Amino acid sequence: MRFDKPLIAGRLIRRYKRFLADVELTDGRLVTAHTPNTGSMMGCADPGSRIWLRDTGSSTRKYPLSWELVESENGTLVGINTGLANQLVVEAIATGVIPQLQGYQVMRREVPYGRERSRIDLLLQGEHLPDCFVEVKNVTLKDSTGCARFPDAVTDRGARHLRELQACVHEGHRAVMVYCVQRGDVTAFGPADAIDPEYGRTLRAAVAHGVGLIACQAIPTVRAIVVERTLPIRWD
Image (cartoon, rainbow, N blue to C red):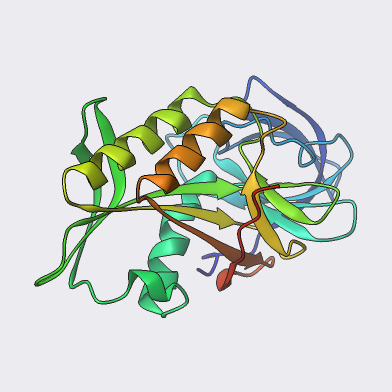
């Protein structure tokens, strides 16, 4: 996925009200940007961090600048826009980076499903194949061992999605949870049990009942974000 125009560099002053960030641009201007991430952004929202914004060009948005990247303490770029995760996974499927999701001829997005009134991110369908329900989560958190972790805050919604996927398996469908890790300095993925133990328990139960689990690693630059490989899963 390539950015359609050059990103704008700046320094984070503060993130607040979940969706807003005050930023000092390199030319000294102070702006407020939209933050497309509902999580805590632990380790990715420290004041003074170098960040990059995208100008959406929208004349109807109150905050046309959108925060896309942040530079971590070790200089690694991290993609914080959760709205890009689905697109990145779609591209990874198309390019064969996620071999577990090959062979389907039809891909539908945001399809209503389940008992808890959810919408599945991707529904894959193919001849002589069971429907495959794919839920995608964006991951930015890295622990001290170099493992990517999800979630970065307690998420009842995330646990609900896992229950819905488990129900899909019980109904004879295929269900897969995909974690899109938008940073290049991790070597594995695992649940953040220290942050949300209930989510970790729900994920383990879902996998035990047949829900597939895939973690893929996307490498951000100021020009593009590309999914390059899948990551091993760690349960510790």
